[in-house]
Image 1 (cartoon, rainbow, N blue to C red):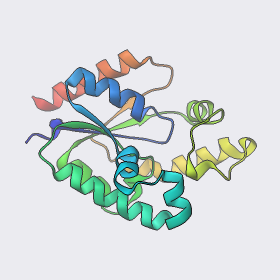
Image 2 (spheres, rainbow, N blue to C red):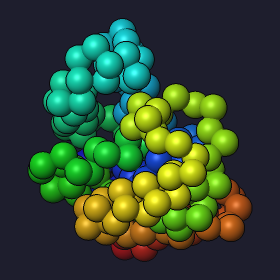
Image 3 (cartoon, one colour):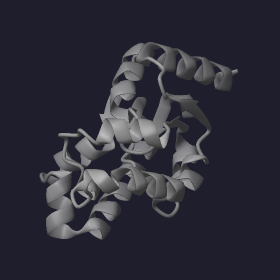
Image 4 (cartoon, helix red, strand yellow):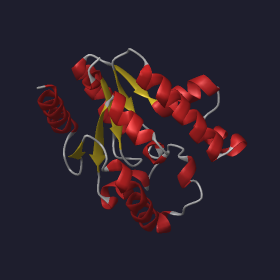
Length: 178
C-alpha cells in the first residue's frame, strides 16, 4: 500500500489538524480519524480524564499503541495527531515509514490567537494563564519543532484559507505519487 493512502497531519495544538483533516479526507475520499478522539473512544475516558486519573505517561503509551495499530492497518485515512504525538520516541520514524506526514506550520501569534479564547479543554493548557500563554506556546513550539520538521513536507497555515491549504496539500501529495 502506498504511503499516500495514509496521510498524517501534525503540528502544534491549534494549527488546524482536525479542521483541515476533515476537509482533506472529504477531498481525497478517505476516512478521517482524530487520534485523540480515537483514544477517547477506545479508553472510554476524555483526554482530560486520562491525564488527570492515569497521568501523561499512561496517555502517551496508549497514544503510541493506537497510532501503531492505525498505521499498520490496511485502511486509507487522513489522521490528525495530537500536538505531542511526534515527541514520543520513535513516533516520527514510524509515521514516516507507514504514512505521508504533513506539518501544518503556524506562527506563535496565530497559535496564540486560536488558543487564547479557547473553550475546548486542552489538558496541557489548563494551568496556564492567558498572560503567560504566548511565551508558553513560543517555548513549547521551539521544543517540538525538531520533530515537526521531520515531516515529509510542511504547509504554512497563517492567514491562508482552508480551501487554499487543502489545494496545496493535494498538489504536494500528487507530486509525491509521481
